[in-house]
Length: 314
Length: 253
Ligand SMILES: Nc1ncnc2c1ncn2[C@@H]1O[C@H](COP(=O)(O)OP(=O)(O)O)[C@@H](O)[C@H]1O
Ligand SMILES: [Mg+2]
Image (cartoon, rainbow over all chains, first blue to last red):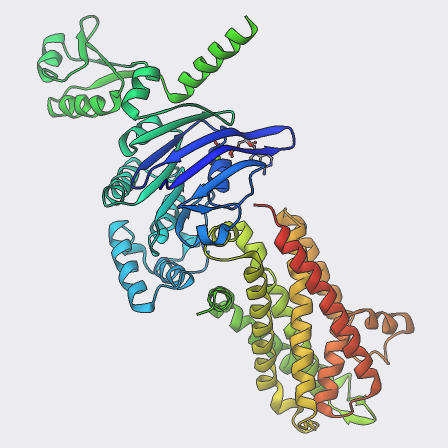
C-alpha cells in the first residue's frame, strides 16, 4: 500500500492553475521532499493532501483511504505543520503542548510525559512558562513543530517548517525529523532549499508553476540539475600559509594573486565552506572578502524555465 | 471525550483567561457600585412594574444582560482569533469536522454567557436582593434569556468575524455594534423615560429583550410583553445562529 497516491491532482483558483495534474507516489517510511520556489504550488498541494481544500479534479488516496470521500478518516491519522504559523497567543508553551494533546485525545499523564520530552528535544524547556505571543518567530515555529508530535500519526506533513529558524535550530529540526523517518514515520516535506531536501529526503519531486518537473532520488536529481556552485574567499595571508592551512580539503583550490584567494567548487559548497572557515580561524588568517556564485534551486529553475520557454517559442 | 467537548475544553481554556475574568467582574462592579450609587443623587429610583426599585438595583439587573452581551461578543471572536493565529486551519487539519467546530463555539459561548451572568448575579445580589422576587417559574426564564442571548451575540460576533478580514475594519464594526447595543437598550435606563423616538429604538435591540426578561424574572412581573420579547429574541437568535453556522462552514482555507 502507498502512503500517498495522487493522480492528476489539480487545483485552480480562477485562471490560476495553482497545481496542475500532478501525480504523487509516496511509499511508507519514506521522507519525501517537495521542492519548489515561491508560488510553485507546494502549499496548495499540501492543503489538498491534508484534506483542507478540495482538489478541482484528480484522485487522492491517503493511507489507503479515499481522501475525497472520507477526509476525516484521513485527518485522524496524519500530522500537519502548515506554512502559516499557528499558536494560541495566551497559552504558555507547556500548556499549548498539553492542550494540543488533549485535543487529540491523548490521556493526561501521557500528554504531560510527551510534552516534557518534546520540550527537551526542541530546546523549549527554558521557555515552558512563556506565553506564545511573547516568543520570537523562530521559537514559536519550534513550538508548532514540537506540538505536532504530541499525537501519534502514520504520516506527517510539513510545509517549509524551517523558515524563521536559525541555522542551528534548522539543523536540529532536520536531524529530529531524520530520526523519526528512520524509525518508520512517513514524512512529506516541502521546502525551497535544495540542501534541506537533499539532507533529509529519500525522494524528491520538484514542482514549478503547479507541475512536477522531475521526481527522483536526490543523487539522481543533483546529477541532472545540480550545477556546481562556486564560492570565492580572499584573505590577507600569503599563498603558502593558506595552502598549508587548507591542505586536504576536497573541491577547494587556492590561487595566488594579491593575497591568496580560495575557490570552492562543489555541489555542496556550504559544508566545505564551514571547514575552510574553521581552519582559517585556527590559523589566525583573516578573511577580506567573500563572494558566492550560487546556483540555487531558484537559478536552476529560472534556467530550466528559460530553456523551456525558449524551446517553446523558438 | 467527545470531539465537541474537547474543543469546548480548549475554547474555554483560551477564552477564560484571568484577565478576561477580572474584567468581567471588575467592570460591572465599578458600574454598579460607583456609577449606580453616584447617580442616586440624580435618580432617586425607578418605577418598575408599579414598584419602586433603587437605581443601583435597576442597574445591577441590567448589567447581567450587559455582561452576557459583553462576554459572548468576545467569545464569539474565537473564530476570528483562530483564523488570525492559524488555529482554524490547524484544527481543520486535525480530527474534527467543521460542524463540530461550529457546535463547540456555540457551546463555549453559551457557557461563557452563563458564567458571566452568574458572576453578576453574585456580585449584584446584595444590591437587588431587597426587591428580588424569584420564584421557581422565573429562574428558567432567566436561564433561557441568558442562553438565547448568548447564542445571539455569539453568532453576531461570529458573523462579523467571518465577513471581515482587516483588523481595523473588524475593530470598528465590533466596537460600534457593542456601543450601540449597550447604550440604546434598557440596561442602563428604562425606556419609558427616554425621548419617544429613542425609547422606541431601544426595542430594535435584542439586549433590551434580554434585560427585560431578566428583570422580569428577578423583580417578578412576567407580563405578556416579556413573552413577546422572548419570542422575538428566540427568532433572532435562531436566524443569526443559522447564518453564522453557514458562514463558518464556508470559510476559505
Ligand atoms: N486562495 C488562493 N486564491 C488564489 N490564488 C491562490 C490561492 N492560494 C494560492 N494561490 C496561488 O496559487 C499558486 C501556488 O501557491 P502556493 O501553493 O501557495 O505556492 P508555494 O507554497 O509553493 O509558495 C500561486 O500562484 C498563488 O498565488
Ligand atoms: Mg507555500
